[in-house]
Structure formats: structure tokens, C-alpha cells
Amino acid sequence: MSSSLPTLAAVVFFFAWHPGVAHAKVFYAQGEALELAFPAAVRFERKTYILRPGQVRDIERASRSRLETNLVTLHTAWADREILGYIHIDVHTVRSKPEGLMVVLDPTRVVSSVRVLAFYEPLDYLPSRRWYAKFMGKSGRDMLRVGHDVDAVSGATLTVRSAAASVRRALAYFDVLLSEQSEE
Image (cartoon, rainbow, N blue to C red):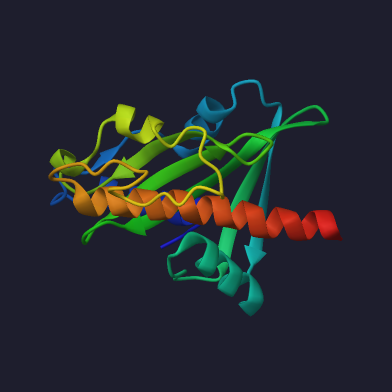
């Protein structure tokens, strides 16, 4: 499920205080994650969109995944008047528990990093940082199909599929929404 930062904070808060989640891991708080993505940024602009039906259709088609909400929050990193890049934090369910991924794009909307912010499934199902780094350089023109242009990971199939869908959604959000803004 695509979500905003407040939802990620609520998920982190819930699981931090829930004693039955021994394998849950929060790697980065949202502020720390934004700063890691763009350490030179002087400000982050946060914009929440309520997607119209046509936008939902276009994003679902481009990402090849269903949106579970028509609400999305996107971030732009700025250094004075220069855009450094874009960030989307996607919270979605892998098997039965949430994962929070931060997808970072450069100003040309090419993936510059994918970082796991929180993972509540057993850590054995979490691919390595090196695997996530393989998304670097990908854009909305790439298919990002597991087993084709995205490596499969034995024992982490559902996590890999969820991550690929998350990156495709982030690319589609920015492609659709920023393209519409430039037309206005």
C-alpha cells in the first residue's frame, strides 16, 4: 500500500510498542532518511496529492500494480533554487507485515537509491543492500520485472516482488504527476 510519512510513523510507533514483534526492524526515522537521501538539501518540500481517476489509471498502468489508495505524498529536495531530486516513501505489505521503502530519484527522475526504512517480516526475507542498489539508473522506461531485469532472490521472492512494484509505483507517481505540473 502506498502511503505517506504519517502512516509510516504510525506503523513504526505501533510495532515499537508491540512486544510480539521481535524480528521487526526500523532502520531509519523519516527525518534521518530524507537527510541521508540528500545531505546537501537546505529544505524538503512535501506535497500530498489526491489522485483523480485518470491519474490512478495512468499510474496503475505504468507501474503494473494496483494502488490501494488515491492519496500519495511526494517530496522534493532543494538546495536554494535548484532541485536536487525527489523522494517517495512507500509503505506496503510484503506477506502479512509492512515494509517501508524510500525511493530516491535524481532531477531527471532516474533512481539514485532505494533504501529500506522499516521491515517487519523476518530479516531472513530481506535482500541485501547490494540487491537494492541494482535499481540505480532505472527509470520509468525500464520494465523492472523480477527474474528478467530485476534479479530474483531465493527465499525472498515476495519481498523482491514488493520492492520492484514499489519502485515502479514511485517512478509512475513522479512521471504522471510531474508531467502534469509541467503542462500547467
